[in-house]
Amino acid sequence: MHGQDFGVFIGRFQPLHIGHEHVVREALSRTDHLIVLIGSANVARDPRNPFTYEERLAMFRKAFAYEMANGRLIVAPLDDHLYSDTAWCGEVQQRVKRIVLEAGNRGGFAVNGLADFNISLTGYGKDASSYYLKMFPEWANIQIDSQYGTFSSTDIRKQYFQRIPAVPASILSPGIAEWLEQFKLGETFRTLLAEREYLDDYPKQWGRGPFVTADAVVVQSGHILLVERGRLPGKGLLALPGGFVDPAERVRDAAIRELREETGISDGKGQIPPAMLASFIDDGRTRIFDAPTRSLRGRIITHAYLFRLPERRKLFAVKGGDDAAHARWYRIGDLSAEQFFEDHWSIINLMADL
Ligand code: NAD
Image (cartoon, rainbow, N blue to C red; front, side):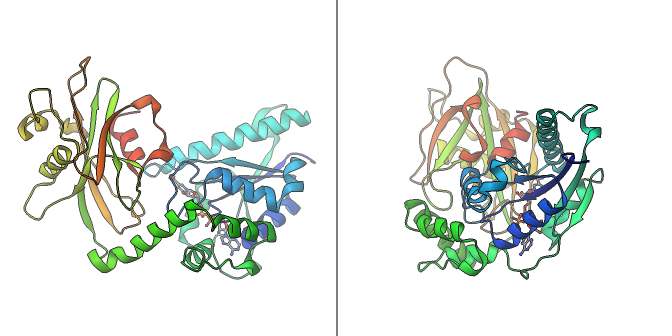
């Protein structure tokens, strides 16, 4: 049934290496089309996800120009849903459905919808991080053995984000090695390296946790109160007001204290007292956010509190508390995931029902 077999290959490709490329080639030898979904497409750069979706797409174009031009290899972005594998699965299913039906319509062989096609999930199932390969029982599975041993993108990032960066050319195709050589000369590389060094030192200074933090999701009249981070990690990214819980304070009090310190929130007559801020908390919505990978600093478990401020034509006044953070109101509709530090966008989505 020429034209009706589709493989699906999901990965972060941070960066794309010859192990991934081998999987792509093998899959293409067994199916008519391969859909590559580039995961974590909607996260801000950090040392674990240093390259944007567009940059990773460019890597695929370098390695597979011919296959992409003739339409056998289709590359598309896939967002993370850190707190809902179901939502993530749904997004994978939707993306695949749309791509398959579009290709089918173009080829003139989509008569009965998705039922006309054979879809298989491709992977190599190297470790626990590939657990998601089992999340699509409706699709066949094509397991491909690695020809190139067990190296990973993690090893490449470790060698690369150094003061003297190594580009391991033996496990990268030439176009991508060249791309990395260029990238290391730019400002973004230096920023990521500073972040990597900061994160390497972090456990030496603070240990690995678990740490307990509190965050404030403050909404008023279609706006949300955020801080722009003034220092590492995540310098320049948007974050919820919040921070580490002091040894002698309750978590809820920490959320209120951090909110006051970082935003100086006031109602025109002066700073809003803690008791009044407490009265704005929607207790039914308090939630713990504990994805083990949510922070590269270590295991940080946060408690998020939703503060619903009264609807007003004039928003409460705020100002940056200190050099660590600059506070300001943002229109909720203007924001998107890749502007945010760690998992704060996921927290906002779940807390504020976006
Ligand atoms: P990856 O780039 O590390 O790996 C991609 C694929 O390549 C995997 O199948 C892997 O086994 C294979 N591979 C790796 N090294 C290889 C080698 N040397 N030889 C042959 N094959 C090799 O990507 P990943 O981290 O597995 O990506 C998963 C993506 O799915 C991420 O973006 C993740 O965030 C996303 N995801 C999201 C959710 C959610 O949001 N709820 C849930 C599950 C997965």
